[in-house]
Image (cartoon, rainbow, N blue to C red; front, side, top):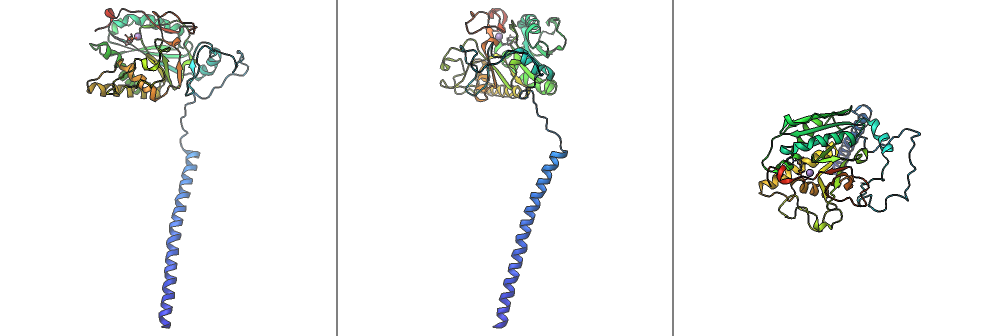
Length: 350
Ligand code: UDP
Ligand code: MN
């Protein structure tokens, strides 16, 4: 009986000891893991590669003693809305100071890439586009214009200012204008991947059948930039020419949508425009496989994209007017405008 008691006590002691060892080993290994993690993090901070943050958009340093008009938060444009409900600026004349903006952006020595397509007879618009771009578009900045054409021999010789360059890329022609227009997304996506990812900061993708008339500069820079279409900014969204068939990946319901944006001018940071063009291209092609083409091709897909991925800067219709439209009182300046053209004469199909 006595011996039996001793056995129980010894067994219990052994069990407690074993449990203790087990507990402390788990606890220690956990602690060890934590210590290891902390060490790893602090080493990363000390010795690891410094993250390559882009500060173009968010750090606004100006020279001391720069002279410019005193800003007001009480007085300004009252005839137009200058901010969206998601707090993106809407850029109108008199909402920005170009001198101030240039003093912020010029020292950053950025490169602005431009894509413009001149396929088939649209080559006739290229000369005026390039000449007026030289006079008004990002004057004083590094600008690299990429012309996509199937008529390499007809690209005009245009004198460009210092810091500006032009590269011509050969593209196939398609038998339908819808295809020529829509394929731009794919070719812009490829251009960014192959060539631009390390050689430009921002990109703007513009229609060739348009001329610059006035200043278009740093006020237009942003992560994702869209232009409000001049034809639909007074119209209820149910009447926007969005794609209305739910079968399409560009579909937007009648009670949805913010603005109707132009397919003829959009832009932003390279990574943003890359994602936009890739998404629109993928959706356009997936639709095509199912035998559907959105009402306004890539413009419909762009509008769908911008509905989900809100632009961080919205440009007013000053940034893409149409020459045939009489100027409205809220349009104090026309910066870029589509020319009047005879569709039957210039497009490969009607
Ligand atoms: N485009 C082209 N060749 C064509 C049709 C279109 O190069 O045969 C390009 C050109 O850059 C043009 C853009 O696609 O500016 C969009 O087409 P368009 O200007 O005819 O569309 P709209 O502005 O009239 O809606
Ligand atoms: Mn056009």
